[in-house]
View 1 (spheres, one colour):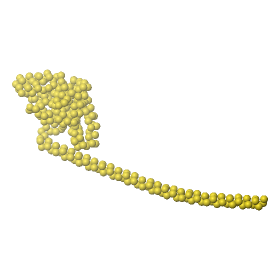
View 2 (cartoon, rainbow, N blue to C red):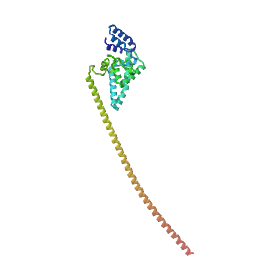
View 3 (cartoon, one colour):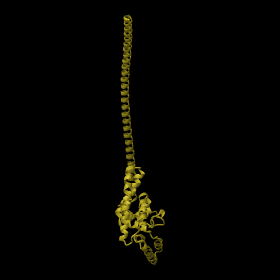
View 4 (cartoon, rainbow, N blue to C red):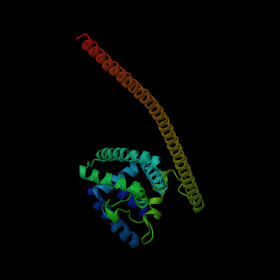
Length: 289
């Protein structure tokens, strides 16, 4: 009897069937006797409805699960690289992917003869969001043996050893490899090469982002300088026009003042002639009398 096979079979069952099947496997292992194996089987915890849904997704929709894990990795890389446009584009995909997988989980549960309610679906959606953000949650999810979706307990039972982490658990590695499309026998060198390639790609993204930011800053400064130059030229033209208008008004004022002075002179002469004429008329009237 192999622990991994037993655990995979148990965590593919609906929760109501889990306890009886586990106890049966425990009795079989104890009868062999394989006491260490029996104790490990007995220690397996019954999954919650939401955890069973997550395990069901991993088993029945491996391609979609792989897409979810890839999206989570890209989101984390974009966030680490502070790649704003890519992060916004990936974030827009996040809710659509999670909603689609929740619908697939509901349909799969119905096909398995164990429909679930809204509470379990809500728990699943919340956990899928956490899987996108947390690589440890993603590794545990990919293992397909979750017992709960909440808090630090949202991990899978170990397949070998005393307490290995979910990311390094032998039980989760084969299934996770199939989900992600990585050969199960990929060695440390390949993993190191992938990490190096990812780091190089991230550095290149950061360099491109910095160059793009510098170009945008230069373009903005150039546009601002051109705008200021246009405004200065416009003000210079307006000032020159105002000076021309001032000179024109000054000339018109001088012309008007000269005309006023000429008119006053003519008026004074006319008044003088009028007085002379009146005096002469008076003189003639006096002589005639």
